[in-house]
Length: 121
Length: 260
Image (cartoon, rainbow over all chains, first blue to last red; front, side, top):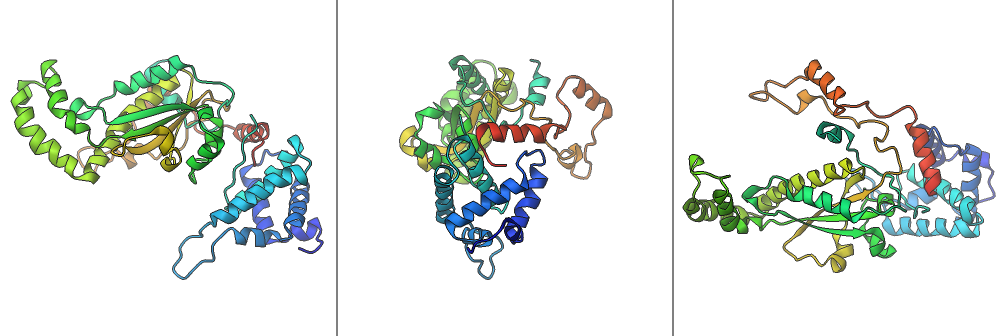
């Protein structure tokens, strides 16, 4: 992904889907869109992929007759591992790193790619 | 807690206090409640394996996951793995005669030891067990009665519960269940981290959609007087979502470091 700005990131279809859905489902969140976009931008720099590409990679290409989208489990798992890695290496680890990782997971979740993280206990 | 309130209070809890274990006494109360459920043939149609979360490795817990059983596994301190036993009717010759002996099945209704041995077992129970689909369906229904009683007993003890699917292959070597038992649900148990009433009762279709008098031509409409009574007795409670529910979910997500 080329050096993009937060404004350019917000133009991606999957980012718009994410923001629309997270506002609907989590209206009480204290995370700002600025935070969300800034975090996703950093993650995209790490993966060197744009948001739409990352989401598309998580689904098998639909064949004729396919009624539903099918998740590619290995790709999803690899992104889950990358997010966990990014929490420490890119986002500084600790509580803040986890918060940033949760933002990236939120992007995937609201685009239909369910993800979990071990809860803090 | 009065029964109607227990029924009204039961929710599917998805945020547990992961640090707080469930006391062995409360687990036993749940299991004793399950034992006392109604059961065809007076035979046990279920088995249950109880386990604390930490008895599984993170890899085993990860393997249990299904698309609908996710973070819940990491938050619940206690798991109850339920299995159904479609061969339960094999005990019929013994258990049905026990019911004759204790006055449950009586000659007034045609029952006798001879009836059990010469009619019920060979002509009803054995053919039933030969049909795998019928046997499994009946076993699931019968186990469901026991699971429900266990859940309601848990709610009465102040615990939270939620039924989930699970991937049995992940714990096959741990649970060591015999092959004839069919895994059905894992019941997650613990003390709720969310409001135990989860901000309200979850949506239900109107009574008339599922209940009928005499035939499907005559749906049963709710009686307002009965509804008022059940509200007073707390079987019927305020519907979800409470105005503060989204804030609660946001706070829980932050507390546990989970996505929103």
